[in-house]
Length: 208
Image (cartoon, rainbow, N blue to C red; front, top):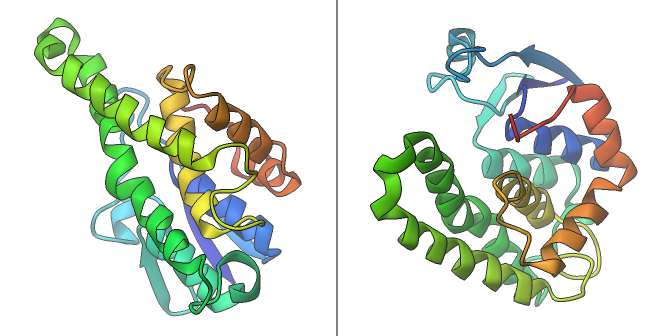
């Protein structure tokens, strides 16, 4: 049985969504953020030394990092559904968006979050951060266009990865100028598997 070590309001929500899309049985091991620090509890370090979520266990295997978990689950249980064949013209695009989500797009979002907490002390950094937000989300908005998915004509692991990045950006008010991304995010949220993942994973509010 796959176990998802699931921290509330975290990237582990995307793993629940993926498992629902794949139609796999899984168990949720819940963890709650500290009400004061908003950090994960120390108990997560018993599963993985970094004490971060998501982490899954699948038999004797432990896998951490969202991208690695998404790729492991798809390669192990859903290659015919959630990723292009390696000889497909869409494969490199899928690889790009899978890594782009956390490797590039998430950085200005996280910097924006941290500087908001610093208040006026962060003022010198804001123009550069805002520029990077516009650069990355403008790029995604144009690349997506009016298509329903980032790669090909069906949901892939790239969409699983990118959706959390867009959710985090929206919680900070960064999507209001990017109509394609807003439309896409609403469509992802309307998927039955996404709704089932929310029901099982509990209240999901990045705005907190």
